[in-house]
Image 1 (cartoon, rainbow, N blue to C red):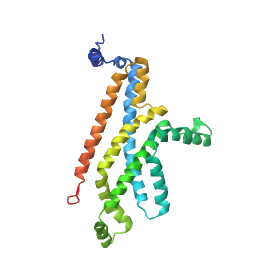
Image 2 (image 1 turned 90 degrees about the vertical axis):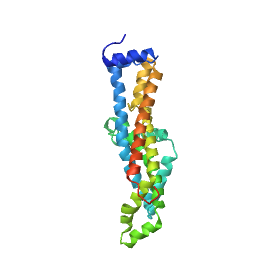
Image 3 (image 1 turned 60 degrees about the vertical axis):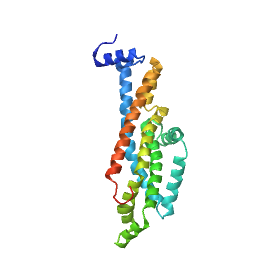
Image 4 (image 1 turned 180 degrees about the vertical axis):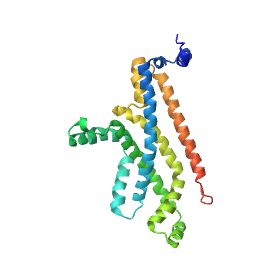
Amino acid sequence: MWNSGITGLFVDLTNRLGLNYEFLATGYEAQIWRDGFITTLYLIALLIPVSLIAGLLFATCLTSDRLWLSAPVRASVEITRNTPTLVQLMFSFLVLNTFVSNLVGGAQNNPLTPFFWVVAVVGLHIAALHAEAIRAGIEAVPASTVEAARGIGFSKLQILRYVEIPLAFRASLPAIVNNLINLVKLTTVGNAIAVSEITYASIMVWTQRDNVVSLMIVILLFFSLINLVVARVGLWVERKLAVPGYGL
């Protein structure tokens, strides 16, 4: 009978429901699981700004009249959004990472960790989706609004910075929030290259404890809660940035 402290009480109660969380009473396995939660939160905290900044840059290039800017980004966006994220991650880690290791004289000298590749691949994948949403928003800005800005002396760069991007960002916020929700879920691909996020940590535990159902319940609740927060924050930002009379 587990009866020591809050953890023991929790284990006792869940045991009566047919769930197995006895590993929480052991230091090693419990620490692996806690580290998995923390790693997932780190990934999310890094990926959100990385994807937004890269997506904004990509959208700016996509709407440029300069072919040397728009064409490479368009090719990158098409490849990125049309291939599975897991395939991109495996290609990057097994091919590009090996190439880097060979350049620097061996894997021991390679500064690029599996964590880096998850941030880079997932961040650029979601950035491609952001870019398309923001590009559509830029192209949806009324021509009369652009002409008015041009009429008061704004340069093309100033129109993009002060008129098109602010309005486009507001118009594309629902799509961006959906992309961020997808981003949170895509952090789980890290387990394919042994990044110890929550799903990888859970696999490490349930292979020893045979408690897949118990851990999957927590994982589902964990991601549901995070994405509920992302969705609510996105809705709040959308309302705060709404422009009266702009149809939002």
